[in-house]
Image (cartoon, rainbow, N blue to C red; front, top):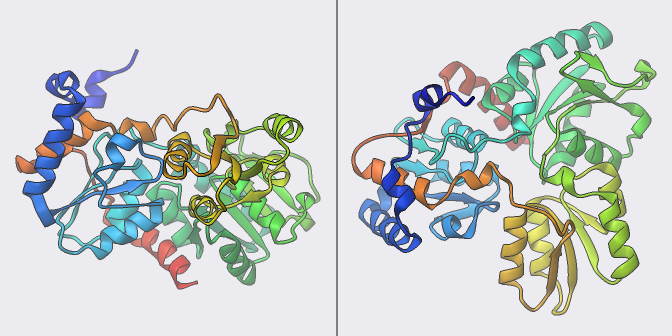
Length: 367
């Protein structure tokens, strides 16, 4: 049974009045609070947020981009981050001490980020050093906890985004012979393969059983992929592509590199969220797309580009459940709490963790 006392020690219960309020009431109050708070408030909104929340965003973008623009906005002491937990952590790491980062609902997490924790990673590192010696450098996708970013920072590594992953792998291979890539095996595999590394030169580390998943010639291993994945992007399958190829061969397939290797290889194009948006924005009128990424973004692209035909690669796809924890009631509650002088659901990364996590981020930005 769910322990409500434990949950309330992390996040107070959302008052019933917000649950009972109509969307019209909540929208009106959100606009009023934003107006009254003025430049004291900054609202970054991730591309995967639902429309009734993203409408209030001062800036939209991907996770690292939003953390950076939050840091650049030195005027606002209050940042209400409409995304998930690891994104709010990154914003707290990069912003100034006088700024407070608020996550409207603490349950807005990320299953991928949760697939690698500090203890698992420390154990894996010790095992891998025993196997490979001092030949490994760690990289972590920004879709990871502050503790994992800090681990990577302490061991000479850096963070990566889906946009710069190729460049960061090239940087890492200039440092060491092998890379431990956390926590998304698919982004790591797809990126390494695009750089000419064969599948035979990659292995998967299983953090549950503390072992390399399949037999391999350890001497030729270059990529050690953490056994993690995005629960949304793994739902795009090769049978979806086969169906489209048979029934709509003129429809281009565009997917995110968090999809499996088989799907990205079979697609016409694969790239980051920003890449996906840019491909649609510059496409000709009448272009046909089937897109393999989060459903809120697909729907927004459909709405913003009615001159094109846009569908989801998986017709049964639903939005990211944890990202959708940020809803109108929680968003308005966060604004009301700030207005009342309370910092409910503040994200605060310990200084010892933030220091090394920022080192990993700064190494990436330096590249």
